[in-house]
Length: 338
Ligand code: AMP
Ligand code: MG
Image (cartoon, rainbow, N blue to C red; front, side):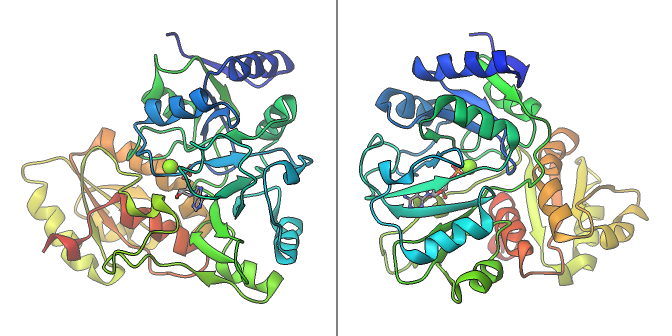
């Protein structure tokens, strides 16, 4: 199959619509990362998404809808606080998990009785969703476990020959996946951190919890995606705490004698490595800058080095919660190694 990359125009939107209605998957841009889109009502299209990504079949998908879509078709109960959240943050990088009406394909939520719904703000994504006027499941358009894509070229690298069309909507502004927030209970609970933070949600509705899976007790995990290794570059990785820059420099100097080594760290730590001539990838200064650059740099790392030494940024809260969550899943932490 030939994989084409096309700019979003009225003509390519119709082409994408026809492909989707025929059961194909089409990659689409969003403000977070690129998604691999398919018809949420079509069992075979949903199964095809799991197959083409190599995604574990217990990791549910998010249904994407346009901003005027009638949610009552797909969600069964809508607590009053969820409406406040939609007003405050949507369209935008916040996914809400509701009780499902069960109208979409059962493969979407992998047997859960809930449905994750997102309304992306990206203009091209909105135009695509309006054109179709049905919920579109769209997990990140990367092979399972690989780094999420923030450009059409990243999608092409993973799916050349496997999907017919990539709609090119430029480089994603956000850079990490949406915040996933459960709204099935008394208060909202964050299942996956992202650009809409726990603090921002609490400001709007008073309270917001954060879910941490209890792996040891063998409890059923609320959001199965939390279990998997994710976002990983195809090179060795080692992640150091922000306080261990000196140790990271020492390991770099030892390892670069026999391998190509690169470093990934925030801007004000760069000079500690650059003064030894080590290739350094600059995550940036602010949390939003770091979210925006993270995946691009992890994909660059696998091209330029065999070992990536990453150093955690100093700031940990707000948007950095989401950035750190991805960085820790992408890289092997020094604590785990020893
Ligand atoms: P991705 O599509 O790769 O961005 O991943 C989607 C994320 O949303 C995963 O972490 C899933 O576990 C989570 N998710 C999707 N649907 C549900 C649901 N019904 N309940 C809880 N988490 C969900
Ligand atoms: Mg993903």
